[in-house]
Length: 319
Image 1 (cartoon, rainbow, N blue to C red):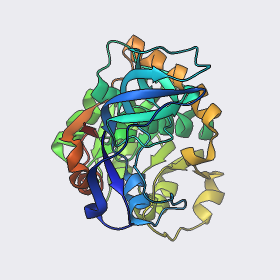
Image 2 (spheres, rainbow, N blue to C red):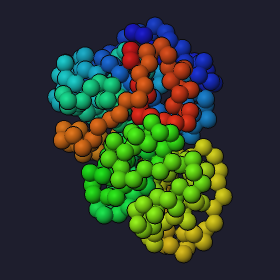
Image 3 (cartoon, rainbow, N blue to C red):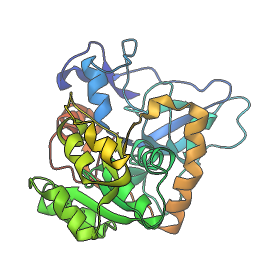
Image 4 (cartoon, rainbow, N blue to C red):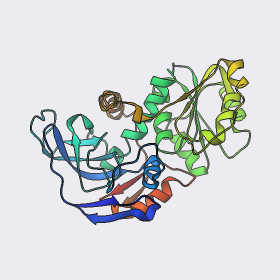
């Protein structure tokens, strides 16, 4: 099979397009013929060797993919060859034509959802679901602000919050991004390049913000805290450095700063989230947005794009 292989940590140039032996499923595993691969920012940190967990080299990146079951190992009962699936965990890596997954590491992909959209599911929608419901305990009628709402996680958070009855405000950094956020269900959209965008967001909602889903805490966290309503919550999904905050902003509002990472969930916990996501796909309330498709061999370019400002949906690689 063809795959992207990392043999040393470094820049995008270490993502090499190579021939690798076809993997085989063992007991309790399935083999997926990959039709599309989702690219996530954290994969760039792993590639650089700066992530909290580094894999043993050589390494095939990724866990987000969609395709069809090619073969099943002994003991597998939930799937059979030909089934459409998306992956939530692979043992061999997703940036490849074939990937081995434990049976619990795949979920059924509804017919109405394309493989490219399926590759945009696991990390973005699981992250958004955990941030909104497991961490922030979002309630209907609350005001939810999603920073970077035109990216993969942002789009997912907008759709999930809107479907659950929140008043949703999304931020974006371009006219095209703002259109995506509005089209995906946000009640209000603001340009996060404006210095007063948080004040404008609260003004549009008519009251302070209850929940902020934060993708870039190192730039926004202190301002986020100032914009919160009493008992407000900021969920830190992403950060690219350190930040200084005034703790009094949390004291005066009884506010909470909540961090999260999907790495802290067991595979079984991750699998238990997927029926909620699949239900949203089936009824049309969840609609992954694919912003850019590239051939698998251009994984290096995808890693540059995923870290650039102005996200517009999910970046997907096609084997």
